[in-house]
Length: 554
Image 1: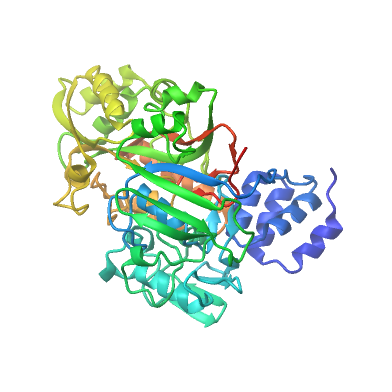
Image 2: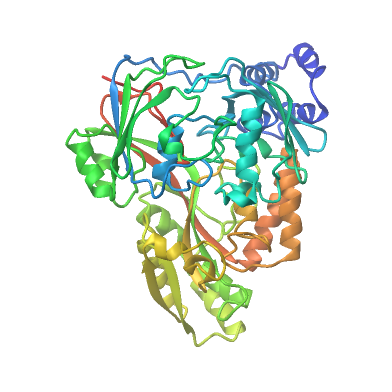
């Protein structure tokens, strides 16, 4: 299709310089259509507007994501892990607890499987010129389950709780250094401004479903969420029994389209195998997250459908940079070169993953510099690096990790591969509670171990991965990596509003991390949800959320 410059000129008149720069990138081919839609949604351009610009730029109509509407009235039954602690939006951190909370409480915006942000409780958002202030316009007429309209003071109170260090919020890993308590400000009943500590080009993801604690609940909330389960969502709590399960019913006063299911039921399981048997036996309809290895039999089961989402979830293999035997980056690179990433993807993950290149920049991110060469297994070069570092005779070291998903099997593969370069690896595999400990330096096997493997869930942008585990002052810096050049580059990336500026800085970060290798990113795994045949309209996210308002049964 040809470009319609008259329409493009009309659209441009009301756009900011930043938005027009992105439009220019689409027109002259510097930015792909996929990246244009994703980054445009981040800047607050609506999906209809992005579609109009794409049409005028000669790309034709956007593909429809609409699905056939299923029959209403079903009871949808879900199997999930047991919540590890009391359900509290401020502190909850585990997949089981977050899944239950998300059934009743909503976010300002939703990060979809395509990394495109979609409006939810906020109708729109936009940055100021340098990305230090983001203004969100709230949806009108949204009611809490307890009664009363959701307004700006509820948003301010919800985010302030999360940003307050005194509350020990799980979301501090996102907000520390970005947004302080008191800097979320009410402009009027339906407008909120976020005044940031520094420019941030990806901020809307920090208050989206990407930050799973960032649900909006009443300003009056004082704790004990399990008694109310108050929120604005399409389902309301019917019953919650700790360690056993929960059920929800359709919210007839919902602000959007009413949910199709009449009820949803959640059964908690301590292990994946009973979930698989329950799905095969017809006791549940959905397994929220199915690990590849444990659920390999379901991948070819004709009575089961697999929803597979490309994600950036991964297992970080950290090497402690401040102590032997990993002080020398040549030793760290040698270990990275011993790993066969193609076998990790094809064998360990049964093809349900993408190779990692020892930085957080997965291929799914639009800002990733794909011109940086992929690191491959090279035993000869690894041995040369060991010799040059004075470690040619090898050494013994312990790898400490958690018993979760495929991590123990991954650790065994690493153990075998590093043996080829003279390293004798002893495995110390702990349950998750023992591994994470208090999750602070000095009181955590995770953060204090010389070498370890840690699970990191999906994020729509790499900001948290760039800061928490890799910056000198990072709260999750298990590698004890301290590099001023890296810190400056990470800060620059996070501040950039422009996609091309992000990509240019990303390339520099990718190359620096290949040289230093404080953390090995071997693969990024797909997020798998299993459903019984005939169950449709299920919308999982790689953050362990499950949107069921359009779910139905044949």
